[in-house]
Amino acid sequence: MAEAVFARLAAALARPGPASSDFDLNPGDPPAMPAPTRAAVLIAVEAAPAGPRLWLTRRAPRMRHHAGQIALPGGRLDPGDAGPGAAALREAEEEIGLPRTSVVILGQLPEHDTVTGFRVAPVVGRVTAPFAPIPEPGEVAEVFAVPWDHVADPANYRVEARHWRGSDRRYFTLPWGPYYIWGATARILRGLAARLDA
Image (cartoon, rainbow, N blue to C red; front, side, top):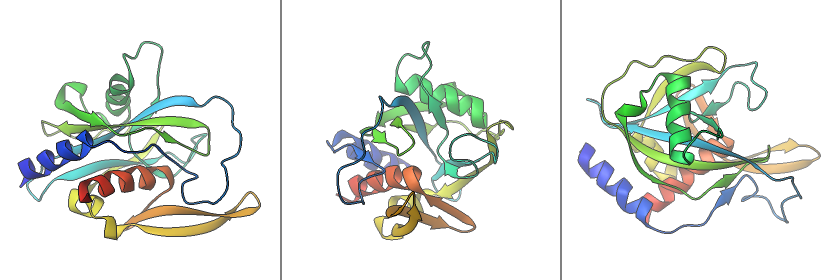
């Protein structure tokens, strides 16, 4: 089962696809923004006895950006990073204790622009060895895994809306158990689910 999942992932990543943004579901042109800050996140998929799963984090409540939200492990590209893949692996090791030597990069999705000014490169990786998550307390409040079948099914995503900065904004959500996955994380994963479903 796991090998079929990873083969399907590889095929999906080989297909071309458009970039995405937090503005996709909202009419009109996105507002003018300064040059985005480059960042990378890791979509870390692991084969497990109960079935493949995806690792996510709940950000610490005192973080400057997206405090308390569900997120993929990741962060800004540092000058010493040899591209988005290296940045995503470094950040995952720092944030959740996932050794970079235990991940094989399968590919990368088109970049995603966030309303907070980041241009995020989603890097997809296969976790090749079991690991015990260790949350970095300054950035991560919790590390947890979601069944890959739930993430990969486009039918599990919903579009919701809230009033923000004077207007109603629509966004994707991916509810799972007690976790409310939404915003950029849900949009990136929804893009991958759509590719898998193509």
